[in-house]
Amino acid sequence: MPYTRKEYAGAAADTTLSTGINNADTTITVAAAAGWPTGAAGPFAIVIDAGTASEEKVLIASRTTTTLTVASSGRGYDSTTATSHSSGATVKHCLTAVDFDEANYWVTELAAAATAANDLIIADANDSLSRIAKGANSRVLAVDSGGVLGYTTVSSAMITDGTIATGDIADSAITSAKIADGTIVAGDIADGAVTSAKILDGTIATGDIADSAITSAKIADGTIATADIADSAITSAKIADGTIATADIADSAITSAKIAANAVTQAKVASGYRFTFTGTSAPSSPSEGDLWYDTTNDDLLAYHGTQWRKPWTMPWGVQGYAERTSTQSLLAGMNDLTSLSVTYTAIANRRIRITAHAHVNPATNDQTGYLAIRESSTTLNLNQQWLNSSLIAETMIVQVVITPTAGSKTYKASFNFNGAATGTLQAASTTPAFILVEDIGPNGNPA
Image (cartoon, rainbow, N blue to C red; front, side):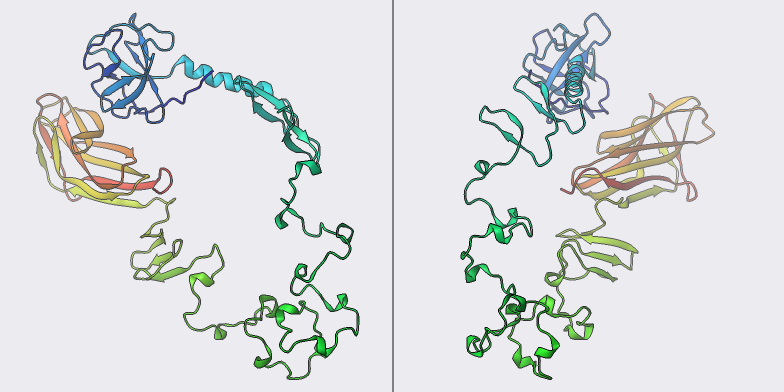
């Protein structure tokens, strides 16, 4: 059976139909869709008039703002019946029996197929799973002439002529018995491979050796004894340029005095290592992965190829803060709280927490107040609270955690009463009203 990935959203609030629909409409308009799936990751399901005789589930292919486009054959989804619905009917994002049945099917298939440790589970063309038992030692998986996958031994017939490379051969795997007599030529012998023990004593004459022919690369490591070298015989002139290899240098022989000032660059540092700097200003010409401890701000920063910033996996802390220390009259309707606005530059895939804090009392007793965090006219979250007394300011707090897109963002605190009620925002230097924007860590990889 075909399987389609569905998209789900945990923060999709219930909404209503903006206009009525009949049983064949394929476009549905809702009153609000904040936090709803978009269909980008796959279709998603809704239920209209849930719990009533008119309940209908619908599979949605995509959403653009508050307009939902129905998937092909999406009306009357999940064994419900397509029917008409009136404007104002409840609409909810929901799970379906199809979702649970598909997941249960594969759990059952997997549990039934695997019966022993190290079983290999494979799929067939009918959406079913089957088992290949663990093979014996040194066996490999292969497809036989009948197209069946299974374990078998590696035979010569399985190896294409001329395809075995150096990397395929284990160290010390080729013994003398594996090499045909008389087939090793000079080009087969690595520099330094022929040691004194391999040469018949007394067979190399002076005439056999060209002037300056014996360089470090031609001498096997550790084969020249002290007795072979005359006192003071090896001067700088006797050593061929560029022939001293790592193995020729004793451990700890190269001290700081032997290294020219500013001679060690990133190219000379072993792969995987980076420089660490300490100072009041950013180092010049950094490489990606370098670390800088900013002593002015007591901050550790990493270079990410184009800029210095805190390590990606750490919280980056406060990104913006604003406060108000004097009262503000609150009129009927939505009031933007003066001075309680923060603008900062968001980085993609970073999760932020926004907190708004205020003390409010109504002009008359027993009113409902709403403290909201907004981006322009969009409400990100709000706290609804019953305010009992016009004489006592009550504390209201609202928070929201979001992952904004990259770019400049402005968030503000706003307040309104239910209906036509009014009141006062109480604030002072010791009890300010404030809005705080904090980076609390990553929500994915760097963009």
